[in-house]
Length: 210
Image (cartoon, rainbow, N blue to C red; front, side, top):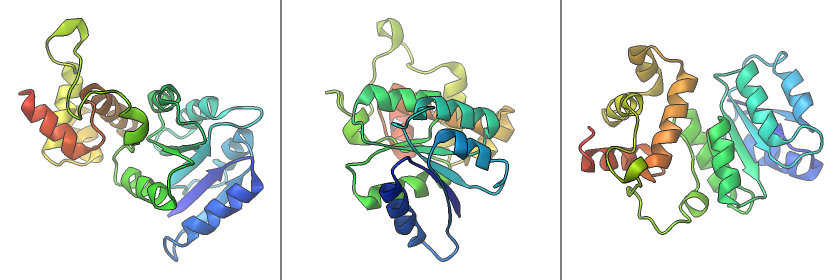
C-alpha cells in the first residue's frame, strides 16, 4: 500500500508516516507539506492507493484540495484528518468527495481502521461527528415529510450493496464510475443516518427498499 500524507506540520507529518509504516512491510509513504505540492506529486506517483489530507493548511486549503484530487485522480480515495470536530465541516468534506473523515483527537487505531475500511471500498464516517443528532442509527427524515429518503439510483446502489456486491461490480452493473458509486454510498449513509454497509442494508430492509 502506498499513501500520500499531506500536512503542513512536519512533526505530525513524520509521526503519521512512522505510524502508518507499522501497518506492514509493504507500506510506503510519500510526504507533502502543502496541497499544491501533493497535487504535483500525483503525476510522479501513479501507484498511490490513498491520500491522508489535513484540512487546515496555508495556501490551498483541504476543501479545495479534495476537489482538485477528485479532478486529477477520480479513483484515488482521500481521507481527511482534521483538528475540526464540526459536523458541518465533516459533511462538507464528504460531499466534496472525501471517503473518510477522522478527527485528530481520535486514537491512532481509528485512522488505521478508517484507511482499511476505505481501501475495502467503504466510506468512513465518524459516529461522534456525524451522529451528533438525537436520531437513532437507521432513522431518517424524508424530503417533504414522507416517502423514500433515497433517489431511484441510490436505491439501486443500496440493493446491490445489501447483496454484498463490491463497488467495482456495482459500478459495472449500473454503468457508473467507482467514484460515482462511492458518492452514492456516502449519500445513502447520510440519508439513512448510518455509518457502514451493514447498517445501511438493515435500514434498507426496514424501509422495504431492498
